[in-house]
Length: 97
Image (cartoon, rainbow, N blue to C red; front, side):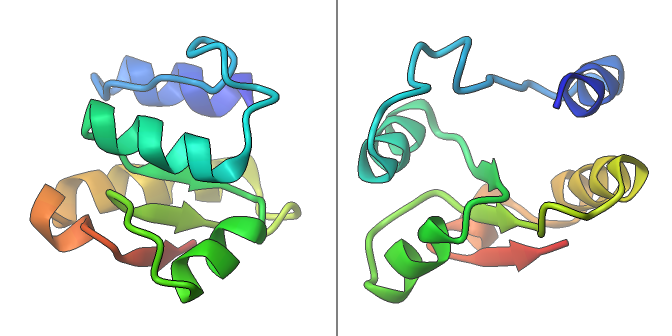
């Protein structure tokens, strides 16, 4: 989602993609561990992360949306979450866009 990444960076948000982190083929649990080590929440359209949350796997926050969510809505939602929720509030929390 290059348009989302570019729009968020233009707003001054610190964004790291799975590709940039060289984690494209890593298991989902490894993504969560990496995000914890980096102090980052994960934005995803992969429902597997919802199952990991349900299993009470620790994370720094998961932001989930369906594949068909319009790009503009994703950008607005991610900016709002960044502005409204603290790191502590995102700990082991899921936000749905």
